[in-house]
Length: 177
Length: 218
Image 1 (cartoon, rainbow over the protein chains, first blue to last red):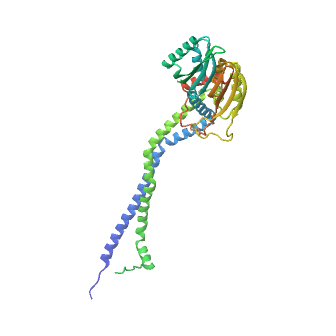
Image 2 (cartoon, rainbow over the protein chains, first blue to last red; image 1 turned 45 degrees about the vertical axis):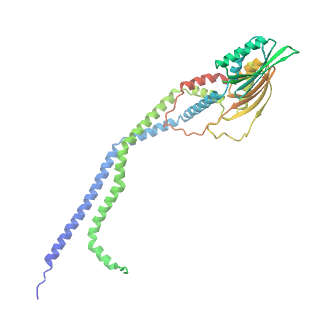
Image 3 (cartoon, helix red, strand yellow; image 1 turned 30 degrees about the vertical axis):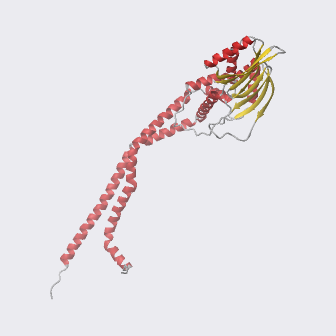
């Protein structure tokens, strides 16, 4: 009967298993160490960052400003009011200025009988006993329109005479600039 | 060809576990470490790279907050209150009937025009303007008495009296006049105060406008 010696092969197998196990254990320790090192480095770097201190400072300033909340809101209100006032002022036509410009060009002896305004059109009727005065008035207005001082356009709507009073009536329509 | 069904007995699994138990623990530790690295460490490192930018942004915000604080401390409360009163008198926050009647009276006294009758077109009194760009207004029809020049002065005075108005149409003759006037008001839109935005001081044009309208309310 032949001897069967299995021992050296088993020993060799055990040695290989132990070596593999050592590699596994070593890898586990190295992994743990590396992880801890990375965590430590990240922690230290984060600790040295100025961000948390800056954020605290920011929060403290916001709290401080919160005491002046009413004042800040009033500033907003003021800007809002002034912006809207400016918008309204820029879109409204000042007819009194236009009227003033028309009256300025009116020679003596001419009277305004009626005046009406709708949107940008002014319709007015004047009267006078002197045709010369009316002629001067028309020429003055035409001159102002040509120079773009009062109207964009002026139209003579009517010229009539009241024989009873001897008055001439002149109706004009102007488109405001 | 039918697929073969492989079954592993529970006892086999137990034998395998006992045999490789010593390998499983280190393997588990390595895998856990890799997992933790990707779940925790990598995002932290990524965040570190953005920290500088965030710190810079925070510094800028702090500068704005400090400037806002400095600015607010330099503005006297009484001046600010008086400016708000002037501006809200010119453009009220809501329908200001008392203000309108006062404006008509003031314009009438200053121009010498005699006020006849007037009527308001109130509209829906419960409705508030939701459109930020619209300018809601109260429509007023007014009859006045006086010469043409007196009526012209009335228009002139009305334009220099708070609340803000706009002559929509008018018809005047030698003795009487009929006017359609719009009196404006505007509610303040809801706003969240953001301290991180710089508070703008009044610009030159705003200060000039305030100076222009300040006599209108008195």
